[in-house]
Amino acid sequence: MKNKPMRVLLAKTGLDSDGKEIRLVARGLRDECGMDVIFTGLYRSLDEIVDAALQENVDVVGLGVSNGHEMELFPRLRELLDARDAQDIILIGGGFIPKKHKTALKESGSVTEIFSPGSSVRTIAEVLRQIAASK
Image (cartoon, rainbow, N blue to C red; front, side, top):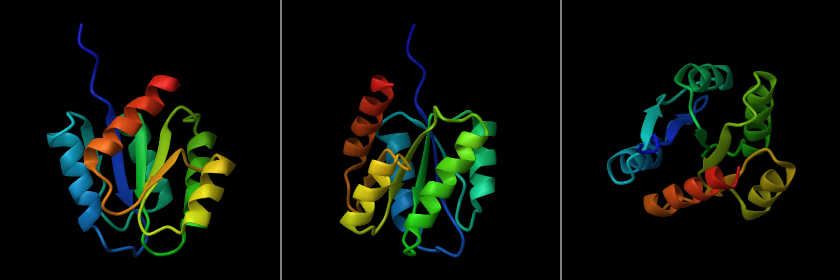
């Protein structure tokens, strides 16, 4: 029996309107890597993202952040997921995030991995599979 494809929800929050990269990642994870991808679109609230993640029964939530609010958004999203008994959902991020913020967010457990713009879709997929396998 073949393993089911990993389900990934990708989202952007608030007024963060730069959606080109996340759309490319969504298409690549789906078309090149065989993952089930749900793209919520732009301008979503964290509550909407959590609701969609639970409704869609995803394995991964990926949040694209390009507005400089990563130190607030990732911890809050992780908190909302955990409060809804979704600790098993892997939280990843992407965007122009300073290295010191990436390190702090990963060390705090707010996010599992953060990818920089230009990261290969195949690399993202490989890292997600490794994370899922280690759980």
